Length: 361
Image (cartoon, rainbow, N blue to C red):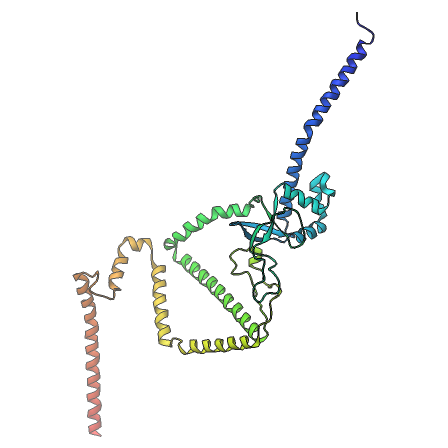
């Protein structure tokens, strides 16, 4: 026979089991939340890294090329874009320093320091963006001359993936240039020549502008300052306006010396410049090389015409020339000799007639 309080005891036991199961589930959730927080900070780091308003550079860290930013730029960036902190959910109300320290603890960023810590001759302060970094001993966030490098591999955009497939196709297309149609060869030739001329003109012009401003005003001004940089992004490569010149102004004696050297080099190049006949020979030689490349075709090579043209155009008759070709060259040269003798005979007849007329007068 059941006791009257048995049902209540069973309900109480169920409640206890429910509480126990709830407690067990509550003890299991923190690792999930922690994993979710890791994913949240990973997403936050990727968003911040891909944002165009966070200024960053590339440098070498322990023989590895890394992308890094400055601490003060990170602080100003999050102050100007507080909406990115919403990705962090519950940690979105944290201070910027705390968020950065969490990124450091999760190894999403690492604090670095410049390798060169001494001033170079002629410089008033250290470089704003050093090219070589080393790991800082204390991994704590700071906005006072501190640098932080991203440690994770950024996701490759679509255009880079397409470009990686495009490079082998471009290489194959370059190898197949001799079999292209004649018009296509001409287009590629003029396009490459124009592009090369544009690059050389740009380099010469920027060097002339720099030299003129340095000699006349003592200012160091390079437009397109990163055009010859080995490590630069596409945006930095085509940056037109240079950064502010922070170095000392050169002395007037050095400017005068280099001005005299520039004038002497110009006069020397003008004195030894090739004359019109030499330029014509160079132009003819280059045009012959270009014509050989443009006029080559697979049908001409298969028919053996290329070998005949090589024999006819050879300058030394003793090398790679058969007896038949020698006789052919001699036969071809005979009409010229006959024509030369005929012209000489005509001149002699004309001169005798003129002398006879003079004696008659």
